[in-house]
Length: 97
Image (cartoon, rainbow, N blue to C red; front, top):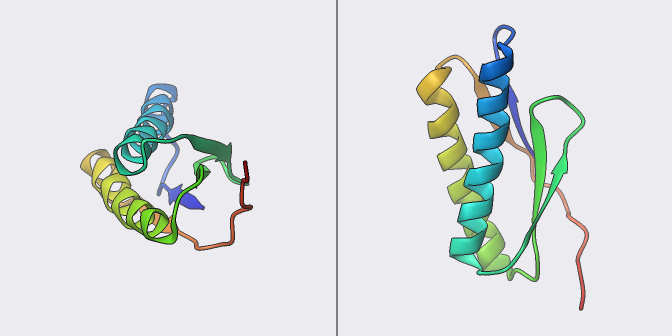
């Protein structure tokens, strides 16, 4: 689960950029690492997401998690340097064929 906390309220335009950009970054990274699908679920708070790689190996999942956290942090901090970007490890459900 990835989440972002901002020190203040975002405008509607800023919120849309954060949400859209985050999902686009995750989708592009998933395609590059696995060439397979990505399931995107909204988290419990406004700026949180759960990204599940379809049929990914442990190495692919770890690579995805590390790179996505780094890329999201860079993306968010470029416009909001005081924002806090977090990744919380959890066991995602396994999808089988």
